[in-house]
Image 1 (cartoon, one colour):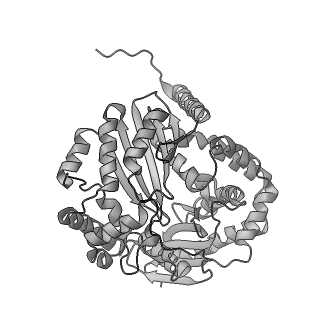
Image 2 (cartoon, one colour):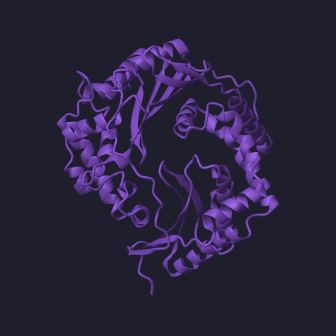
Image 3 (cartoon, helix red, strand yellow):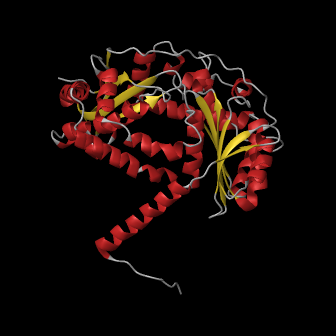
Length: 442
């Protein structure tokens, strides 16, 4: 018979549990201590050692992502991510996947525009087997015809769905309008047509371009010490070539001020507005981060949500987000509304952007935003996987090994003048690119 040590009921008890959970997360955030580990063969990783539970999370990234796809082979890097664990070494796809399932090991790969990502999740008793499998996937993928064709079919099906999905259509239209011929304009997923032409040789060549020791970033969290980790690092990553074969991607200033309207027989009109943003290493990024929270990033408390949803009921939600890339940055506003109210919705969204550029927020709004952004930060540390991803992100952005300790103080230091200054820099006298996708009006 199960025994309950204590019982809590009612709203007060629920609140108490929430407070206990939050305090626990805050203690975890404060307890994060990062070691820099360098293996005998020179592979470096950041490690947060935590033996609370017997789990290890290892995340990593390589320099170069889908922006490295050759023209006409869009989707190649995404297909690479889908096939690296579909058989490796002497194990075919079925054998490799069965081994992962048998040992409860998770290996995943993905790609962004600028970097290629991987992750490993395993229990400590299966660490040796898990690292062996990861080493095979990274160094000896097979790219057998059957699994490659199967993954091509899955990605092609998704690409075809995107051809009738208003959000996907709007996103691609915005990228094409703002990036033009720059590699960032190419769809990460590719198209059904470009995916159909890819083969094992393409995948092997792309692996050779991207997976290299130079530019490799690693973050590890869990029940593993530095000495054990060093051996794992050499096993998995030391066999890689020293340097890849990346095509140089140019810094780029996106095009603004254009309008794109695409008709689609759907119930609502999707709206995207594209404006200048910042790269993550820009000195104004933290001020822009706070400004964006007030403008549209704060969901239920932002200007966009208040004016578009709460006051006028034009949309279930409206918001903004910062998109920092390695070679440029964007601020993107979004909403979805009835077709006959799309123009009104765009007008209200533009008014909030102008308001932020011209007057900025109040001191109370600034303090509320900073309180939320600092108070919610521990939520990024409530699992080993989240912390591992954070370790990789910090290194990718070159934020420093002490960033966890500095971050909230940097947010607290943002002044009203800082927010108003960055709002003018990004938004004043800027005509956004406006994309609408929806049914014909009138």
